[in-house]
Length: 316
Image 1 (tube, helix red, strand yellow):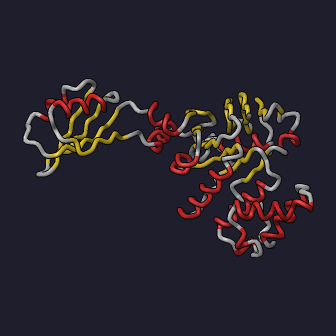
Image 2: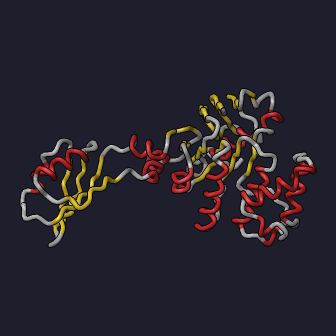
Image 3: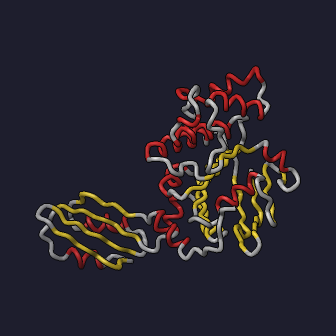
């Protein structure tokens, strides 16, 4: 369990993180979203003990990071946005070097390297120089680095930044696989990545948390209207618009008629799909399709983070 209490970091007059509170249970994949300058990186650096909070606390498994930063770091694997990899080494030599630093027993080292090479998908490049690898493979090597001593918590800062769509999908799959056994916290500005990967999403803006829930619940809770698209088999009934308009909570009815189908876009202030179905059934119309649009995470993100102030930044 990770408990973040009133966590704050300022750099002089600049407030990077402003009194955030979070409880993160074991085994959860948490995505931190936010525009550039929202405070994501600063938050992750405080969680890892890389920088010291101005005030507030981070407690991991009952251990306060303020007084036990070395002990806290034993529970965490950290991959910053720019992987700290020595590019003049072979991948294998680099990971052996890291295993020595992490004091992995020699009798267990080879088994661990093989396990990580399979988990992170780097076995085929183990004897290649790091400098020759694509960015996607470098990120995989970075993940192996962060996982070397099998930490309980994995913290990743923009793990798919700069990758192509195929590489993003590969890293996403690795994160989900790792997330079966570990707590994972990662920052991203790729909304589809968070939606597809995370159990829970928090959105930061100007150093503060402005949303905290699953992606689906965020989309439902922030929606102030419902749009239902209906397709009916063609009917000569000319009163369709008036009939739908009489439904409870309807604000608009748009109809597009073709020779084979009638498409209807219904905007309501609440979910009335069951009423729509009963209405269609009572009129003996033939329903071909009914789909309710949901508020997109992208729209919610834009609404919650608009007007981002430049004085809040995360580059330190």
